[in-house]
Image 1 (cartoon, rainbow over the protein chains, first blue to last red):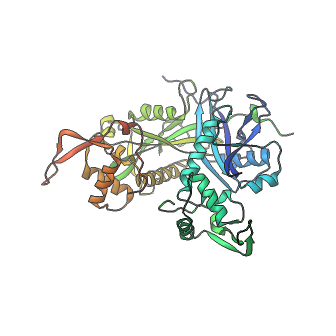
Image 2: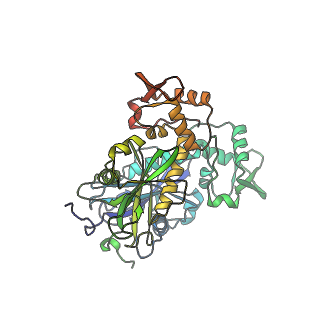
Image 3: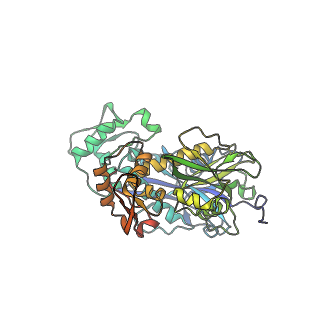
Length: 228
Length: 228
């Protein structure tokens, strides 16, 4: 007869968060110095145990961990994938339910948390556990999804100009976009509203209209049938 | 000071599998009668605990559970999403790492397991836990991904004719497809090879060429930039 595993210790169960933002024209990931073993003192993704006494689900656990460890409430958070196995964590067979968060630079500045260190995702990241693979997986998901959705808007801040938004899309898609067809796609998605009387002046250019996401799209993604 | 959760009991950690197949022109999901509490005797998705002593990861656990409980080795298995929370399982705060499997009807017939019951996904499923939501999520993922990938081929069996394959695509996409543009897309994906001398005769039609997936695509998906 096979052993009954019901009474065996359960795997270690954690959440980890790939928090992404745009700075200096580059996509960055947030890391924190680890305060506990294993890998104490090393820069790693924010993460932590599920707290069965307070978390409504893994999403709630991820939101709590980000808030408690960074002071940031991300406008976008989505489950990415679950990483698991006997060797990824030296404490034993473990499961990490990985989420990715998109946060505009201004929210990171407001949180003003000196322990949050931003690293460019396109350079090698010397992270412990399988955190580097988590970052690669999140960046790939973000880049794929950016081709046909409003997802990049969550990196743009509460208000933004169309050139600023186009710059973020270009950065994620890794290539310049035609201004006319970009604006046609954005109009087609019908997800933005102009800020009345809101303009931003940059250098010698004439003032650019400021926009924000329509209320309906702050809670859910707008998807395009055809990519940009 | 916050409590240290390191020594708290970890959540219950399971895998569940949404095993999908095509029969009688309909998409079906495999269920088994539960042999243990809770919900003993009820039809539910195949699932089980992670076995830390033998599973390489959650994917391995899902493959083991399907094999042990149904006798089927699915040609396609992918992680879907992780469901979690304090109330989804009466045993306590729990995590289920859900996978979906695609299995051609002929493999289910070969396994000849009387305890496997197939239910049509498009009708209400009276399943315990959050298994109905798992099925809905898997079907949505499969249907979305079928628009731009070779995924439906894994429902078609080892060899199939182009009309048979088109029928599966149509069933997943919920609408008739134009034969000429379907064949152009399939040719573009360059994922099939004809079986030399392999033909199938159906009714009054002239014999149709049999195809199979090229070896490279039995291990990975072919993705189209533009959908069908």
